[in-house]
Amino acid sequence: AQKITQTQPGMFVQEKEAVTLDCTYDTSDQSYGLFWYKQPSSGEMIFLIYQGSYDEQNATEGRYSLNFQKARKSANLVISASQLGDSAMYFCAMNAGNMLTFGGGTRLMVKP
Amino acid sequence: EPEVTQTPSHQVTQMGQEVILRCVPISNHLYFYWYRQILGQKVEFLVSFYNNEISEKSEIFDDQFSVERPDGSNFTLKIRSTKLEDSAMYFCASSEVPRTVGNTIYFGEGSWLTVV
Image (cartoon, rainbow over the protein chains, first blue to last red):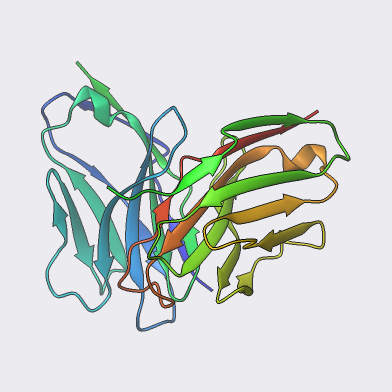
């Protein structure tokens, strides 16, 4: 079974600064994928970034990057140059098959 | 950009009534999913569907739930006799190929279900 842990229930960041959202995972599978999703207050689930377990380089998508440390089983999301619109819930998820297991989420609040 | 669409966006139903939530996955995607999120809680997997049959399902997906692909585009979740604890956001999702490792899973905007 897979398990995802997000230890930060809430975080504040100053606008234009970078922020790291933590995610650790546990799985016995050798092949798996790690995802980050953003959920604004409107409720939709927006895909941000993906990292495969065999990818040697950390994934990047615009202002989002994934700090993947396989030995430590962590997949932290880094948001650079935070914007007010980044205020939302952020979920880390993983799959090793055809279902996603989600963490409990981190609420990020960007201060102007 | 292709997207997963869901209807209705919000539905209020009486306890014991049947509810059908509809989804149109991304057109070239072959794997379909339903997830739910009770207010304030984490997103939970319900069921995955491939080649017109259920591929995997969770403990939550009991006999009151069913899924169907009635035509070439829609993917539906039916809750036969709703209970108060079924109140949640229900997300449909799809991915391009059966094995989702290495392929992104795209979510719809969700359907809020409120059971009163």
